[in-house]
Length: 138
Image 1 (spheres, rainbow, N blue to C red):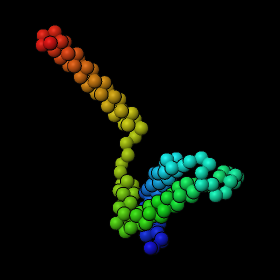
Image 2: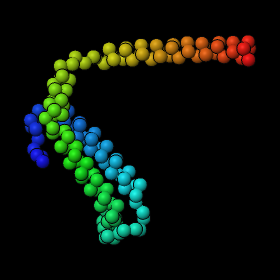
Image 3: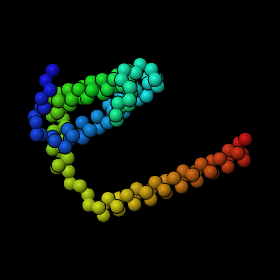
Image 4: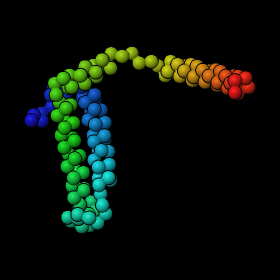
């Protein structure tokens, strides 16, 4: 098990984003694991520690799940194929010519307008078809 960073210094932002998002998902999973199995007052190992509260079997299990999840995330993100994908992704994102704020704003207005018009058209077709069905068919 190699814990060193593969191609250290390359793809810095893409790796950080992947670690951050993966860590958040793992934390949420460990928290939900704890919340599902926790029973208040049961399996208390140490009582009333500052900032931690009671150390229970369930908290230790959730912490182990979190730590093993982070280790697994690190191993997955440091596989050569995954690391090369993240490095290439960051390099390609640097080549993108991003639109200006005015271009984004005008495109957003067009999308909102087209969505509104399409919604009105669908509402009109639905209304007409409902009237035909209720008045002439049923």
